[in-house]
Amino acid sequence: MNRDWIATAQTLSQALPYLQRYADATVVIKLGGHAMGSDEAMQEFARDVTLMRQIGVNPVVVHGGGPMINAMLKRLDIQSEFVDGKRVTDAATMEVVEMVLSGLVNARIVQAITEQGGRAVGLSGKDSGLILCEPENPALGLVGKPSKVDPRVLRDLADKGIIPVIAPLGMGANGETFNINGDTAAGAIASALKADRLLLLTDVAGVKNGDGEVLTELTSDQIRDMVAEGTIAGGMIPKTETALAAIDGGVRAAVIIDGRAPNACLLELFTEHGAGSIIRKG
Ligand SMILES: Nc1ncnc2c1ncn2[C@@H]1O[C@H](COP(=O)(O)OP(=O)(O)O)[C@@H](O)[C@H]1O
Ligand SMILES: CC(=O)N[C@@H](CCC(=O)OP(=O)(O)O)C(=O)O
Image (cartoon, rainbow, N blue to C red; front, top):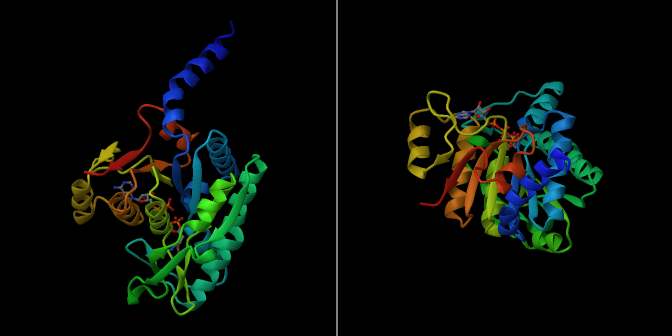
């Protein structure tokens, strides 16, 4: 018998209990801007998400696009600054954020999934009242904090086998458009769906301690201490805050993983040890 075939059969039989565990599970996947750099990485991500859907998982994709927004702001000569991992957003910046997230990044992901044979629909938090926001902090301008998430449109799409791809924008009570950090938007959606998993895909293997080692499992106390002492900094702050809020909001577990690693999502879901840093309740 062909050796490759035996290896494949062994891998599949090992994966079987996990395939059963996640049958009909809702998995919210946040694809960060840094994790979607190359066309190959995007294709691989799209293939994984399509496969998940084919085996009965309900994936919901929420994306970022910070580096792409930075590039466009630079081309337009608009200055931009971040406070604790969030972009200070005035009206001119908001226009560029929406244009890049919905017009470029969202469309690119939808196209990649479609090319892999999946059915994907692109939307933002403004569609169908998905995410209602209030201002997060006056110093950040039009940065939104989700105050209400109505996930019905996502359930409708999942029932039809369609993968929703969501840009992190929200609507204000007075018709404003808000810029939501991608991790925050993914966490709010995962909580509203009571998702089985929230996967936060980024450009590092997980949350690292002061010695640069990835911690495979993290408690909320550890995270709070690491943020206070500065070991968790920059864009990792909203990511870990999101993980904690999602757990409190009823998500079973959140995982921070390297989205550039081959088959990152599949390995996390369908192998015993998973990948990256997992945060569970308790
Ligand atoms: N303790 C930590 N462990 C891992 N990464 C950290 C840590 N503290 C800060 N970071 C930084 O957070 C970055 C991930 O956040 P960010 O750049 O916003 O990602 P994304 O664009 O994928 O959302 C990492 O590339 C790393 O530079
Ligand atoms: C408020 C805020 O910071 N919004 C983010 C939205 C995109 C994002 O979160 O992108 P990544 O996931 O690639 O970092 C921004 O303007 O960059």
